[in-house]
Amino acid sequence: MVQDISLPKCSAIYFAIAENNQIFYIGSTVNLNSRWSNHNLFQEFKKLGNVCIAWLQCDDISLLPLLENQSISAYKPLLNTRRAKGDGSGCIYWRTVTKNGKDYHEAYYQYEFWTKGDRLTKSTKYIPKRKVTQIQRLEQEKALVREILGVLGVKL
Image (cartoon, rainbow, N blue to C red; front, side, top):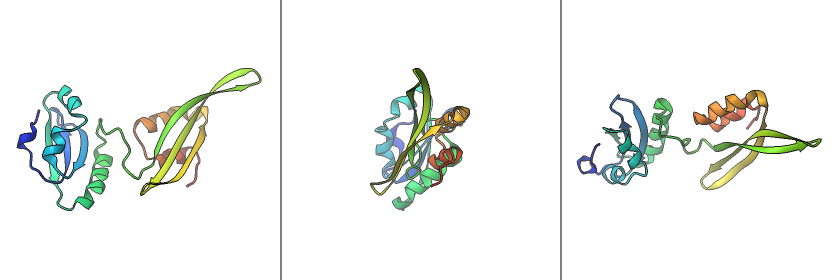
């Protein structure tokens, strides 16, 4: 496990890499040394055994979100379970609907889009049974919310 003492105090995109050279997490920070030692996933990193860190120093901190998002999209690391900022948020939820005395379990996709702290859209779309497996796969892969909505026929 890489110790924080050896890392520079620079702004960077960083890559946590397992022994098999698989990138399993990508993040960005304005202080690599501090971020690595205080990372909320630090215990997860330890469980993976020998982990190394690679980084790309970026002096222009305004570029960090863009570089992080592009890197996550390109490498799809296992522990980056959130969508990139600006890609919207969404989740599948189930509810029971009773029709003619019979209960039916129906899937819905709840989603919202935000920009600069303002919610632009919040809505829900029914997921037809024939598309549930596909939507579950896309959600697990953290596909773009717009892509999922496209499969559901929602035009934004």
